[in-house]
Image 1 (cartoon, helix red, strand yellow):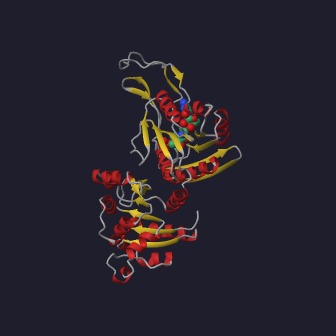
Image 2: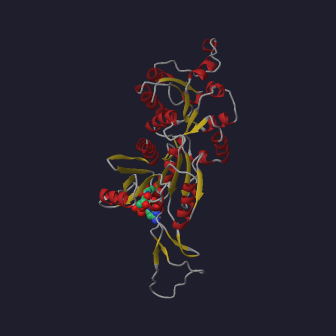
Image 3: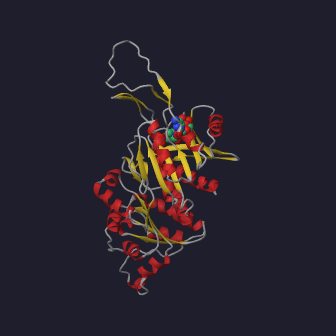
Length: 395
Ligand code: PMT
């Protein structure tokens, strides 16, 4: 990434301390960094920390007579190639969404023509609050705004859920991706989550996939500039901002929707879904009753979405996932060859706390003449790195 001028806005939240590491990473990569802090941010970290790391005076006040002699807020707005607000609090997001300019940071955001990236950080209930959702919805439609995160997981207040700021390393990679736009102009189709194969009107066969890996990849691909379609089995996750979600239930639905999405143009197809390999031969019309001690269910093979897409004459760059509990590399390489994939991402799902229905993962990616291990780390972090790797291999 060519050196650029990055204005880092810091608002009031405990994640503010992590932004010091972001400044360090950006400076190490040769960027110019200036920092603007809100009054709330100053309650968590001191301007002196950021002055020492950035090598620049930190601005905290809009009505600073000395700085405003040279129209400081307009100068800052024009100076920045990119504004990154990390952490972006619920209050800051509300003020930005409503076009307010009541402190230096909102005023600079109002005056700039450069992109503004927000890394939200707040308690999960605040993130899920309907007024925050409305403000985020407004910003998601604004072409000047990028929304990076938030991540899921344990929060400083003891809650668990969405609202953690993305890690500094991930933000650093998003900044690199945003400027270079490694997937801009590309259309990416991703499958995620489990499928449900009905046995009768109240029962089904399924698995433990939560969709977190696929949703994180969709958000990372979107941040890298791609148009993203997410074909999703039943999950309890909010649609990633800017991503078109096509909900499905069964493996057959997944093939139909994924094929339809690929028919409309697709450069990269990523299959993170945990698709049921078999479905009941027939779904009973009525609830099956307990009439005997044992019961036999006849199953038939489901269609393989990934193999079908990879076998097309107009096949996109195809990336499969392999969830294994033993002999991970051998099975993964075998799947890559059999399904004629460009890349396969293997995860050892026998490791507690990784893989299915967890916030973290560890993967090894294989392609024809290379391999790379990523993690253990958050699925968001893994998704960022995977997208960078896919973009590299694609080109
Ligand atoms: O959803 P999470 O809780 O975040 O968990 C993520 C995950 C563990 C589900 C994910 O990282 C993962 O490994 N997904 C693949 C799960 C799997 O078991 O794949 P598989 O070995 O059955 O299939 C190999 C590949 O073919 C996969 O890309 C799969 O999406 C695809 N496939 C398989 C069968 C089928 N009928 N259609 C398919 O497209």
